Amino acid sequence: MQDSPFLVLDKIDKSFGELHVLANVELQVAEGEVLALLGPSGSGKTTALRLLGGFESPDRGKILVRGKDVTTLPVSRRRFGMVFQHYALFPHLSVGENVAFGLETQGWGKERTHHRVQEMLELVDLAGFEDRRLGQTSGGQQQRVALARALAPKPRLLLLDEPLSNLDPTLRERTRSQLRDAIDRIGITTILVTHEQEEAFHLGDRVAVLHQGRLQQVGTPEELYERPLNRFVATFVGRASVVPGLLGPTDERSGEGHREARICWAPGMKEIRWTGFLSAPLEPGTPIEIALRPESLCFAQPGGENVLPGRVLERRYRGPLTYYLVQVEGSPLHLEVLAPGAAARPGDSVGITLAEGGLAPRIFPQDPEDRAL
Image 1 (cartoon, rainbow, N blue to C red):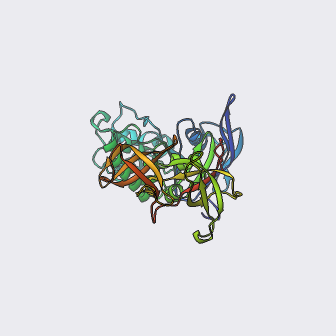
Image 2 (cartoon, helix red, strand yellow):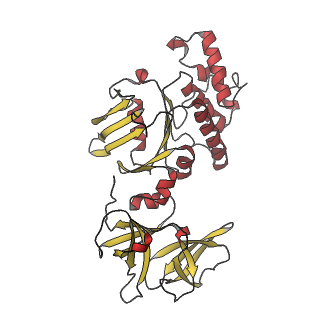
């Protein structure tokens, strides 16, 4: 992160009546960075985008661009471009007229506007589409028309509100690559709102995870997946099984920050000991939750040391590797295991242990409330 970030959200709060939508949100975005706001419906991500765009005002906090307070600046003076979820294109205008909309009223002039429209259509790979009607374009092409229109006035910040949600899966993947390519070519600082992890990981240099109006974690896709800071991030970003346990003593062999988790699955069951990464300082014997990625686990011979006995419930084929849902014997716990496709079948008795070289389990305090930053 640069010493002087391009964009700062400083302790932003926003409520609608009694509904607290955003609480003490703090973010810094570097110039030229693409930041994805990721979260489920109702997490506050779209409200955050509307606050940035000037369509709403925060109850508390400030929005700074290059160190200048723009919190109360009207939409027209922010010089931000925005692509709305439903594009907000004008069906009675041609592609070129949509891109040019508003430029002449900003004093661009006809000739300069024409050149800018050509430049933007070429940028989004729609050269030659200037006279085409919107009804003659696909959903992916319309998304790129909306992007070209947002970029035409030379904004200093680009805001994208679920820009690919209206596209079918195949078209979405192709358009996502085209969108990222256009952003990279122009080098514009971008804030993207999405509830799709794959979209956030593909488009975002970093990802900010929101839940119930609170910022849970900000980091690269690799950081969020491999080192989640709490249970919500672990289960929302990627797949994870979460199981209860008790924190054991420090395991000096595992390196700094790693602790042995003594996992007691049920009264009278065999005790097993697995090593995982501790997310916060805790005393041995503290009740904990252990987040396990499917690739962190593997099948083993039942009855072995530190091996859980289980029975395969489901098998979901995914090519070279297959997801297995396994019920741990003597408990209501289900674990998801990623293994070769022919490793087991539904009904088989299996053993489960930590995969050698796999992602270490993440250990969190056992708390009904997910702990945010």
